[in-house]
Length: 411
View 1 (cartoon, rainbow, N blue to C red):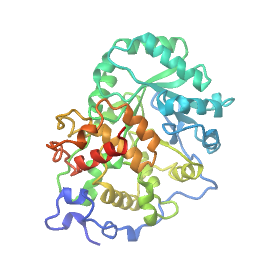
View 2 (view 1 turned 120 degrees about the vertical axis):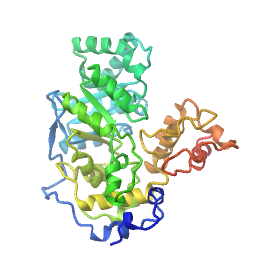
View 3 (view 1 turned 90 degrees about the vertical axis):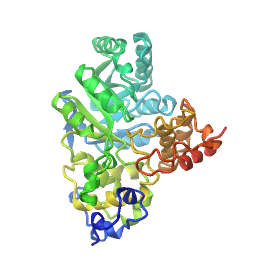
């Protein structure tokens, strides 16, 4: 088998650009079923302690970011053993919370519910409390188990004294049990360090996948010096773990172009299952959440439940995915392109919208997210300088990708 790292003249960008590396070269001909025993219908096989919260949650749990009205899907998750349901006030305009609340009525004592709110550096306690009470109403409960400061990418949001005071008050009133923060953008490490050092959180929800880890690429590239995406993420996750803070991973599929991989998969060894096993093998991660949009998809995902190791076959499949999709997938937390646009377009946010539209196949979610971007990609259509063209260390053609978004969602 050809070893990528041994190819004379092959650069890291050649590998990441995906065209030069074939599936055969990554060893998928040797792909064998990863070892989890058959035990009837797919279901949760492992419940893990979430930090020091005392909660034992399903290792593969339900993400509600795309949930719209499908109560049967939520009940199917419950029947399969999932006991941790993650949602937010902003997901599908509040429909996600409402759907979960309806579906889990009468089951509140057997599940853990989380929700989230987006704040600013000046959001008041009263505003935070109103947001929480709105979520409680939609979820039809008197409390949530974890309430997250959502999509944090600015320490000012955490240093706002109103947040810890709100948390203390909401805990006293029994409306939340634990506080958390979620994030996946460029200042994630800075924000996590601040939250941990100032004892602001009991749980963190962070983007964490094989595509962010230089050590993953090193298995294929030998001694090449890889660009580190969030090189401090392992450090800060270990720091959270040492402090007894629960760690939940999200964005675990690196864009989730699932259908691209189907012809290389075998029963018990799908791309998604390999990606989840990679995450669950980390001693610094307690569990993961993932958006589930069908019962069949959920059953596939639960095939990875109970994993504690990642096999060489998993790594081969993940490497193939990187080779196929690296030229279009934005890496969470990189933000190397952040200041390259003279028009102030938020390139990473635009590329995230593209991921929702093209990879997830969820045009509605993409349009909703695009409408919330502070500076949309309209300026890209008439840009003559293309100052961002060389800004991506992974070789993404930023002008081409952002223009495709602008054309698709032009009003």
